[in-house]
Amino acid sequence: MRQQQGEGGSSNVFSMFEQSQIQEYKEAFTIIDQNRDGIISKDDLRDVLATMGQLNVKNEELEAMVKEASGPINFTVFLTMFGEKLKAVDPHLKGFFSSDPDMKNIWELLTTQCDRFTAEEMTNLWAAFPPDVAGNVDYKNICYVITHGEEKEE
View: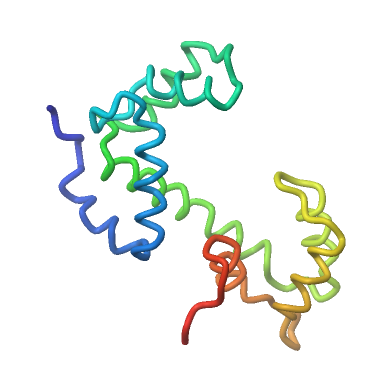
């Protein structure tokens, strides 16, 4: 098999994640790799999307997904792709969770976008992670808890 361009430099990708996260990504990779050949292909994506009820995915959409990588998508490449996506999102989250003393903007976004938070979830969020005196929220800790279910040990 051909090694992905730049894959050798991506060995540090494992240091970007905690062991529990790597295991979760490995489980996701295994689910997506439907034919169990160690590479996520267009056919793997089509099959896994079909199991989730998305039966009419266009070939062009699948090709675009696979082309996000510069070569075959093995687990290291898969993990690298997630790392790159998370790096791209991080600055947006930082701005999103800072300097909004009345929290209206954050409240509106979290209750109207993506997996919408309920009013009760928002109340619980602010109770668990109150803003500091300057109105800033520890967004990294919130993101950690959302993805891991508990606060980091200091």
